[in-house]
Image (tube, rainbow, N blue to C red; front, side, top):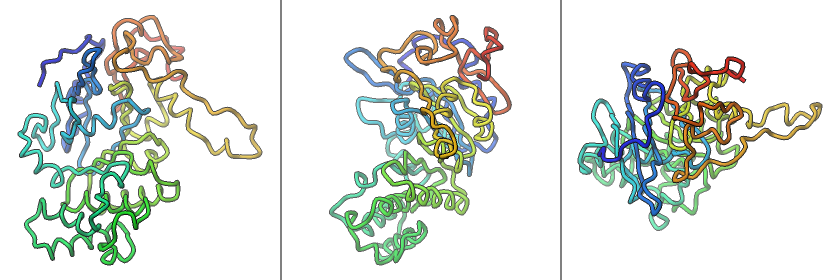
Length: 359
């Protein structure tokens, strides 16, 4: 499990040390120094590199970043659903104290669905087009619960009602193609929650939906979280959704966590240049105000680098407006910015230029 050494030693506190310092007593999921690697022709790449974070019971946490930053691979690593040849090569994934990265696959199959469930971004690829909705939800129930077919079918109808599908028991006889994209996503949420898990991982659950349906899906998830006491790990690139739904934000870049804080603190005091770039690129109300002078939406220059051609030092330094000489040497580790707030950036170390901090 730990046969791939880190490519370099970062300067600062290890991510796990930061996570331990911030770890709550009611942590449901504890990820410690997680590393997920993929062998390639150019050598081994680490899609997830020494990632550490916690999710508390009943808490909604967002994992955000551009495409290719390692968000979905982190989720698939937690669920042990990695596509080959990817594998976990280091760290721990502790759920209620048990390391999911070390247990046999037979035990992991029991954890999936019963304890941790996942909703994927495109429901049409997850639902079988030749089976009725009711059969698929009922099958998920019977896989984990000792109930009859009749009882599973009834429970399937109750789950569709829970996610606000009209005429839920009639919809059990529909096929996936007879439902809209929003309804299919509700079915996937119903299926994920059918065995009463404690943690729901939602991977871009609203990406393929229009804005109105996105709001409805997130409203359903928020209601279910409060009603069922669910912990939710939301993977998204939509910071607007995060602001409405989540309590904490974890920002990822090139497989690393570069900042994590409460939603309120991160929006008020973004401490990593990458986070500030993401927030500045959000469309504002003023941009749609005809009385305001129109302007170009700010962007982060450059592209996310390939994982097999990462720059030395801080991986964001080629795109960073605040780059310093020290950023080109050793990679920084997470540094405490404030209570419950850390950032992987030399702007918060001894070598920082005070005039640059908080720009």
